[in-house]
Length: 359
Image (cartoon, rainbow, N blue to C red; front, side, top):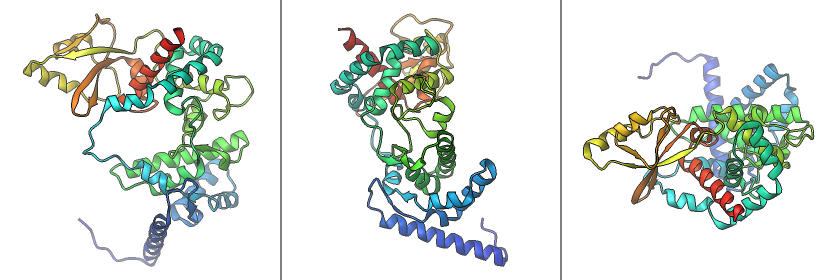
């Protein structure tokens, strides 16, 4: 229920400013042409951006005039907005089609070349962090085809656009808060590294370099693995290797633990009602072997009793779904990208590269 109150002069002024800001945003959106370099948006005059600048000055000691000048150079990228919009709900998920995009000959061959070139760094990362080389290779291959597709958006443009004008979705406020955090990290990373933030190029979401780390992840999990004194995920594949391994280790990777096991599901009607309760239960391995088998989940191999698992469903459009159970290591990969399709593609691509390399 809306409650009517007498509007004060300050409130009326704020409402007028908000209307003008909204109108300005609408005008900017209308003028966009989906080019990566975007359009001038006068971000420094947006009320929310001004408040963000004040926070950066107070919290981190930035110079306000310098930030105003910087945000006057930021461009609005409508293509980032369009790419962030969710796919139509009616479109069925198709694991086979998704997998085929990543586990394919060009990417496999590039993975073999990458592994051969950086075998020493991959061995060192595995020894230090416990993450197998094939998983590191799988992630970098899925993310950027081993540095070939790192993105052409200016990170400042993409992240600022998403931080203050995210698409109208149920999670809009939470996503804008996330991107404002990433904008803060972008400015801090640039300041700490002594680089111009406008030189940072990345994906439409602001992910940077060979492993496509968000700015906050670079600051928290990036490592100087080549020993050159700087963390450079844009130009150092060796830093990318160490950083991916460090990220997974910090997100629950357990040395020597298997990743996934194939399973079939009971066709008994009463059993189906039980195993379906294990679908969509979060990104966590939390069920015992006994719990899963009692629900009609039939493993293809004998499973260790001291391990926890989660049930993975890979929908295949009009065809039958594929089912697996994942360990803590599978769910560590989902912390890199919160998608079962993504994590399984990493596992399958890494395995395919290893097999091709051994032939």
